[in-house]
Length: 320
Image 1 (cartoon, rainbow, N blue to C red):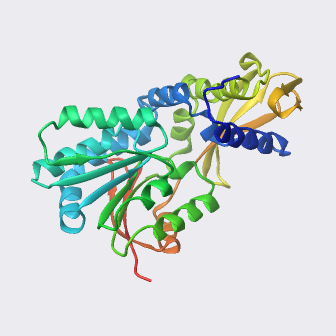
Image 2 (image 1 turned 180 degrees about the vertical axis):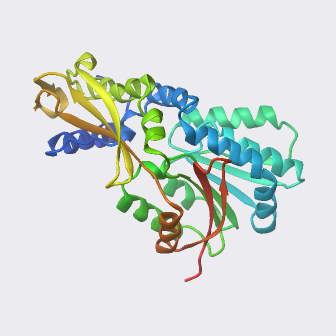
């Protein structure tokens, strides 16, 4: 078992696995996949030709960077990013802001110390004598936001992180986020839009997605002393028209019993029984408008890629 993880993290992981495997329709949260190896595989996924969100969002930032810079300079003096990762899209905006002569305070917040260190080092190397003051925070989003002074800010929540949350969880997250912001603060957030289900099927059934989902079994084995055999499971992604989400499942290819040492429990799998490992909700513009209103925001502007596959929606915190 992996002893390099802290006891609270191990308990959180164990509780999530126990809860998910105990459900009649087994379902595990996708965050369980994301150790350094899981993140590495996902980065490879974002570079696939058929995986649209990352490519579309890069296009949006390259196309609309001047507009975003002008909005920021007229309203904010602090750029905050939640779950910054490698910051590839944000660097496009930062470069534009600096070329427009803006003095910039940038605070990326991520639970990964390695990701924050790599990003800050990359920024210092790329902009060595600039007007950029970049200070990373290794923290939970809300813990990090609580430490930031009450200056006017623009918060970035890019990619598809919100899309991976259940709708009730997404609403609760956004309402909590609104509570940390001042009236008129900006939130720029990524939404993957509904598109042809055949395109969605292509996007979520590459062999890298199977490798990514099967890595979850490695993690449970490593963290909790389980005996999952990856060779006895296969992955498939399906668009569910009722939930409006692409849902990924691992199928057990045979009847088998999995024992998890740390939980002191065994779980029986029937042949072809499923275990859901991921979900990615696909939004309409009407969905996004309703979500903003319900969460205490108003939509200021929507920025699209050329195919309208993805939108970065700019919200402003509404007054009470």
